[in-house]
Length: 92
Image (cartoon, rainbow, N blue to C red; front, side, top):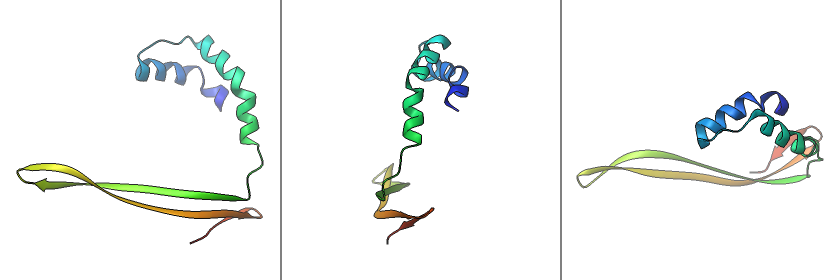
């Protein structure tokens, strides 16, 4: 996936988002140097226990005086998860 996307998508994004040109050969050299590290990370053994923090928010338009402003209401939760066999369990 990394090799398939690196040239065209990365070049277009660098021009669109960062407003500078990166030659495809530079993108290829960078991805070739990090590719083995990415594969090793993807194939690493997973830890038996993970903490999960979920944060979400919804924005409401609220009238305050004579102005309409944005107010955000946040929700969050903290849970732990562990793996048993091939399934993940989440506590709480």
